[in-house]
Image (cartoon, rainbow, N blue to C red; front, side, top):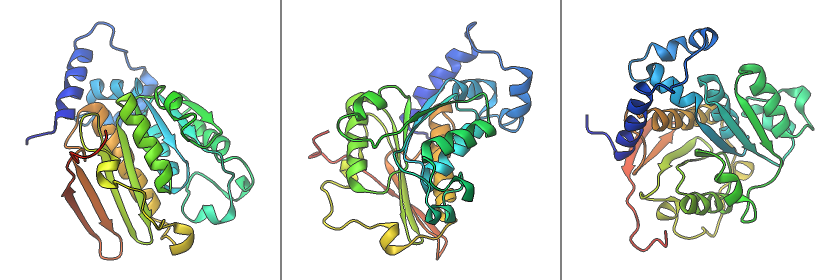
Length: 266
């Protein structure tokens, strides 16, 4: 199989780690916790060590971010940052699987931190109770290795994208509404979010206005986590340079090529 350039970059890191005397040794508890991943030839000890050494920033812990963060913490990503200003509402519980009824009124970042810490106490969870915007995006994104988009509006995605381009950080994008979703991975040097959406659309599509089916959030958030894990471990073919389009009503899933726009300012 021909794999993308990110594979070769990550593979070089894994090969260095596997032959390095400073490679972190997995503890007995880690071997038991991650046994099913360690059994995968494409992950193994080098891949698991890479995950344990990785940091990911989850921007928004709604439907997408809740699912992605839980999957990454369970998989052993060593440090997770959460950026989220909102509180848990009753209407969130239909799709935001980190929360329960008793959490209503609590800050999502704090409720998510508590739940994720219970899931894997060895993972470092950092909370940033703020909305990501032009004033804080650069500082926050520089602190993490890979960024996961859990937002629900164009403006936030433009902020994430532009900061990731400046910092040369990979960015796992997803959006969903109704029964439909799309997903991609934007990497340094490749097409970015502005190549997909060059200008701010006149009308925002929102789950609040159009609705959303609950199971879509953990499906797409889980795929975001999978993209993070593949990128970090150099496993398989990522969505860099492609856009995955999913329709839950017809169960159609297809990939289309996403090219860098020569007119994109990035």
